[in-house]
Amino acid sequence: MKQLVSTAIILSRIDYGEADRILTLLTPEYGKLHLLARGVRRIKSKLAGGIELFSVSTITYIQGKSELGTLISTRLIKHYGTIVADLDRTMLGYELIKRLNKITEDQAEAEYFTLLEQAFEALDDPAVSLDLIRLWFDSQLIRLGGHGPNLQTDATGQKLDAAKRYVFDFDAVCFTPAPGQGKFDANHIKFLRLSFGGHPPKTLKQVQGSAELCEQALPLVTHLFRTYVER
Image 1 (cartoon, rainbow, N blue to C red):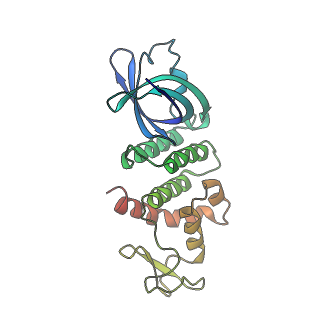
Image 2 (cartoon, rainbow, N blue to C red):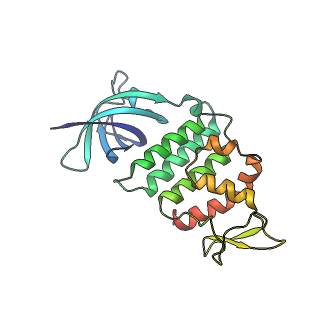
Image 3 (cartoon, one colour):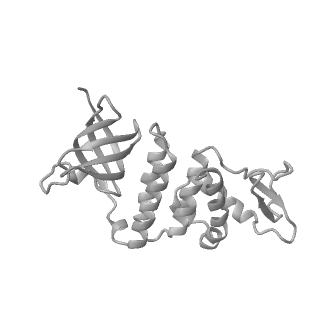
């Protein structure tokens, strides 16, 4: 049988039999894979080092006749060790992996692999806040799912004005003018454009007032995610 090689990130691990595991992995070339790792729970297993959570590895596998293939070898490329040294970052990491695994089909696009790799990099950096990572990650899932908000024009079709304040219309998925009452201004819109535009969390962190902007924009992004992606 033909052996295939890919870069991979572990999404889930399920114990199987006495020493095996069934793995779900995300790859840029082949989407999601379901592989049997034989004997991986044994102390001297050569596979174990390359299938750690919060890691990127090179894997070699054989695709079987069913959807379950067989893992042949692994080589660790990078382990994001700072994540597992902090309980809050570890828990958010588990949450993001689970969220991505749930909403993606087996033929997941390569962009989802890149997204998860960038999420690990952000979680591995203590200077990047967890709320900022949450907002950015959900923004990307919304965008990749084809549900990105209109951040260019308001509900009447007029170009967003830097001098105006707005509220967000969740039915129209865009902002609508609200003179004197609007919660969002030009700074929020710029911040959201960067987030939905694919810029990494480190870039968002450099925006002046990013902590406050994130706090105010996070409920909006969370509601969009739950309405259009998680449903």
